[in-house]
Structures are given as C-alpha cells and as structure tokens.
Image (cartoon, rainbow, N blue to C red; front, side, top):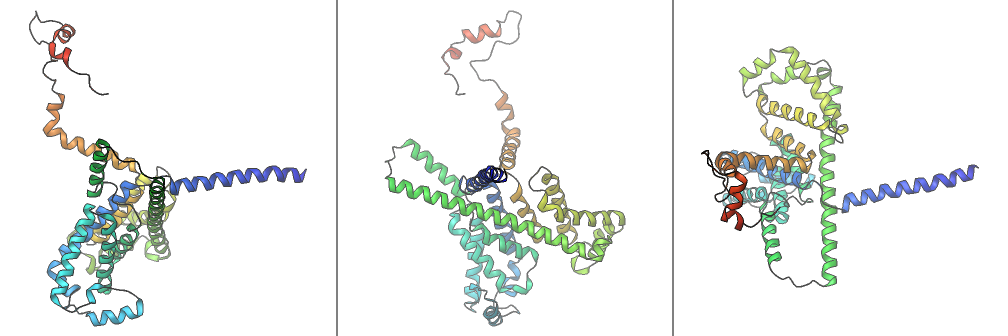
Length: 383
C-alpha cells in the first residue's frame, strides 16, 4: 500500500514540476515582457542624466575636469585599487575634456530618444560609469542608482517602444508589406529565430534583475530604518528636516516640522511601505503603494533638495507598471491632445449624408439618406 501511494504521488509531483519548468521557460523565451516599462526607464534615465550634465555645465571643470580638486592623477591611483575606469582621466587637456563632455551630452540625448539603442545603451553605460568614477566622492544615492540602471539597460530591448528605432522599424515593415520580399533560406530563418529568442531571454533577465534590484533597495532601506531608534520613535523625519545640508527651503521645512503628528505618521508609513514593497508586487495592492511612494519621493525632492535621487527612484518604480497601463495612458493623452483642435471636426457629420434639417416639409432622415446620390455612391467604411 505504501509503495503504491509513493508510485501515485511521484508522477503527480513530476507533472507539477514539469508544468512549472514549462511556465518559466515560456516566461523567459515566449515574448519580451514590459517593453513599455523598459522604454520608460530609457527615457527617464537618459533625461535625468542629460539634465544633470546641463545643470552642472558651468561647474563641469571643477567637478570632472582638469581643474577639479580630485585630480586625474589621484583618480588613477584610486582606480589601481578599486578597478574602476574613466575615459576622462586619459588626458589632462582641457580640449579633450570639453570634447568628452559634448559627446556625453549627445549620447544621453540620443539614448533618451532611442536612436540606435543597442549601441547607444553601451555608450551611455560607459559615459555614466566614467563620470561617476571620475568624481566618486561627490556622488549620492541618485548617482549610484542611475549607474546601476545604465548597466542593466544594456541587457534590455529598451528601444522597441516610443523611440526612433521603433518608428524606423514600423516604416521598414510598411515598405516590406508593399514590396515582394524574396523568401529566406531555412538557415537564415533559423538564425533569425535563434537571435530573436536570445534577445528575448536576455531582455527578460535584464528586467528581472532591475525588479530585484529595486526590491532589494526598498527592503534593505526599510529594515535598516527599523533598527534605528529615531525611526521606531517617529522622530527621524524631524531630525532630517532640521539638517542644514538638506534644507533648500528653510521656511517650508520649518512649517512641515511644526505638524508633529503628521511627521510621525509619515515616518511610520515610510518604513511600512519600504518593507512591504517586495511583497505587494503580485497583486493590485501595488498600485496604491506605488502612488504613495511617488508622493514620498516628490516630498524628498522638494523638502530635502534631492531631485536626482527622487527622479531616479520614481523612474525605477515605473518598471513595475504593466504595459497595458502605458498603452492606456498613451491613448488617453492622444485623446486629450486632439480634443481642443479636432473635437468639433470629428463630431461634425460629413457632407452628402446630412439629412435635411428644419422646415415642416422636410423629408424624413431615412428617405434623405437613401435618395442622396453621394450616400448611394459612398463606399462602405472598413470595420
């Protein structure tokens, strides 16, 4: 009896494991996931780094250039110990640095627009790594997150949506549909399928790594806060609002600090959101959590003067929104944009099918539509 039960149980376990393995395999190789989210990450981090370079343009030489207090020689000595690399230290020439800075601006702009994304993603990662390593002691949490995401985005197909590459692909497919394409050889088709599967697997793994990184960031931050007496006592935000280094608007910080109950509730809610974040990603509860995190990061940007960090975290949170959210948002934006200029025209009836209006002797609408020669000749619309 016992052997029969074991024999019956083992096939059930085997079928369950086989089904799970097939599900994981289909998830990795079936289709690229979160293409819109990857595009939002590309646009967000490209724009953030472009704005950072433009904001620091007047001080570029003192931060990354030959005139910095942390000289290229000191940076090279640190690279020998840490293994970092920066193309900014290859020459002490001011002309070379200016050329590198202009190339960094162009790279960030083209990466944000999605032009030749496969190549530009690698160049963008090299640019971010080089500038980060050149001024390693002037970075903060926002710079570190942008650096990590720039490296991870190299793995993703972040140019498939909302990019110049996507527009070029649509035009190429339209031309291919209109022209007669020569049949491919079996070897070429097989190579194309293998390449597509490999790109899909690498992209899905890259998006998974990004999700794990953000979950680890929130979870570890929340657990560290739990260990501190100021967070458990509800006074952590009070001390943060009174730090001179993080008070861009002293009057606003003082006004917020006067509401002690709100400060305590916000502190406890921050810890709760960060600890619970990895556990709410597989249900609808993630949407209110992401909305609360958005408000928290906006508050950090305004009250503490950390716009780069807050922007980097907001863009990272966008990776957890499904593609249907972005497609719905795009359709909604197009409707809002078209409504002021073209709303009245879209609702206006076409000439030739307009029934007679007014007078008591006017014909019935059905009779007018049937008797109108333009209505009789008009071709049927495509469904």
